Image (cartoon, rainbow, N blue to C red; front, side, top):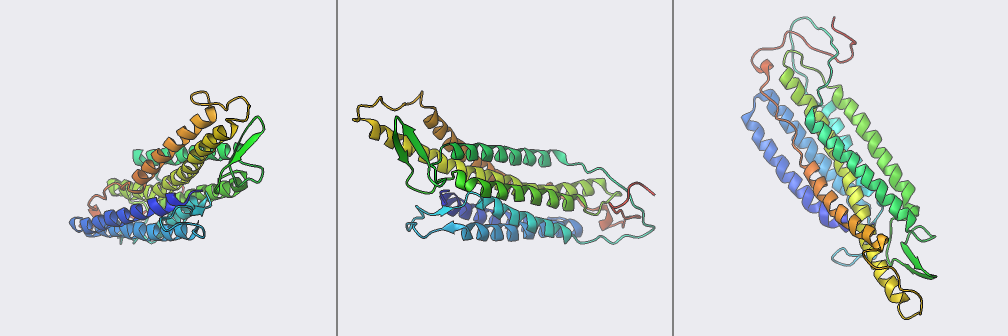
Length: 319
């Protein structure tokens, strides 16, 4: 795929994420001690995840034939999904690092349903939308690829024109699907870690904020990973299909053959325009997801009054 999606987009996005998380870190001073530690730990995990994910994405870019501006650089379509997997792993490790709260009194175990909240549901929707757009891009790339699977192709009455640079055709489909599958597995495992956070039955507002925040920090990576992967596919396939279409019309003209289809009846070019537009929309949505803030952590009741009980999620009921 065209690696400018990585080289031109992810750099400013990571810088913006660093600024936003620095503001979150400094804003933790207004919270009580427990909430401040939770906010700072989350901010630190987000920064480390963003830096590592960016490093992975940059490592997946081939600049051997690129110009000084980055034009001509290529990358495997699955690179953004793999970078998101790194971010998810860091988020899961950060949740495992959650500091325990000291408690007094007898210990009891309880199984509590997790209130996932609208934030988690919305991020899941963005994640699924990205996967659907990835499937569309991979299907179009498969159907319009040349026999070798690495170039795009259009044909009209025996006249064949191919793309001049790397194209996410059928040769890249399996690897991209594998990267998206790895993203799905990492998301599922990280959500299990988030759901297994120690519960605070004596402070339900705090429990909900911490648990929902943990899910948000995982799902925003999942959503951004699928959306940036989809954007890379769309912003590579769309412009290249349009370029091939224009050159095909030029090749057919003057040959005595019937003219090649033109808009608005050229559905392949219409699809190219649509994919290009959807690619830009996916980039905007990915930025929105990456900067999605977790719900504010309320003041802990245990800050002044230690809870009389502790809760483990391993039990099947109250006892």
